[in-house]
Structure formats: structure tokens, C-alpha cells
Image (cartoon, rainbow, N blue to C red; front, side):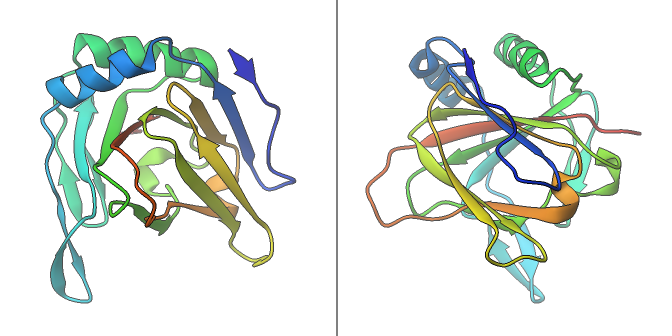
Length: 192
């Protein structure tokens, strides 16, 4: 497991750990088969819009973001194993996970920060990646030229911590190049 130090110059902590999960292709196949995926609809400018990805929410607590309610589904044995990996890598406890399935390059996630109140002041979020390698982008909120692009390979774990969510936005852009499916799991601690 190769670990990098903090990849940000300031205003938060970002670490990428390669090969955090052994046999990522097997894990990907199990996630596709075992998880009950759904396509959420968000209200954007007063109109319902299908999100360009499929999602699932598992854990001990529900969660609401972007006007979407996520009642918790039970932990599966595989998700419990992956939570243990995320907790070990991040050095933090987690009680919930948001799963995203990006079916191909036309699926993505726009610029955002995970800064909802139930996540606490300086949340720690651990993101495990499986399937196709995709580009993950970050940009500083007040310094437009301060940005970073990372490739997230299968089996890797990206940890976001400290003040990152206050100062940075992140995205998984859509791409025109041919890419296969990607699943990422973002583990978090929901504070009640």
C-alpha cells in the first residue's frame, strides 16, 4: 500500500493511497451484482433532472444532500470489509457510505463540497475507487489558478480531511473518451 503525503499546498488535507484494496476487479464485480442501485432526481432551477450517475446509501444513519433523502440500507458483508479498509487508511471511524456508479464517460459529478451540517466542522471522507480509472479534479474556492487533477485507479483510497471542504471544491468530470464503469464509495461519519 503506497501512501502519499498531503497533496495540497494549504487549506486542507488530501492523501491518495494506491492499492489500498486487494483484488479490485473482484470487488467491482461484487459491487455491481450486490448493490441495489437507483437513479436520483434533483430539482435544478425548479425542474426535475436525473442525476448523471446511479447511487446507493448504506450505513447506520440517513443523510440528505441536494434535496435528496437517503434512508440507510443495512451494511452488507462486503461493505463492512471495505469500511474497515477506509477506517484504517483514514485513521477515522465511519458510520455511512455513499456509493456512486458512473456507467461510462457520460456520467459524472459536478463541482461541489461535502460540507453539509451532519458531516461536522472538518469532516474526514475516505473514497475507494473500483473499475475504470477516472480524473478527479479539485479547485480552490478563492484562488482560481490553484487546482489539482488526480487519476484515481482501481483499489485506491483518497482521503479528504481538515479544512478541505471549506476551501476546495471537487468534481469527477464527464469525458468523451471511452471508459468503462467506475464505482466509488465515499465513507463518512454522520453526526446526529
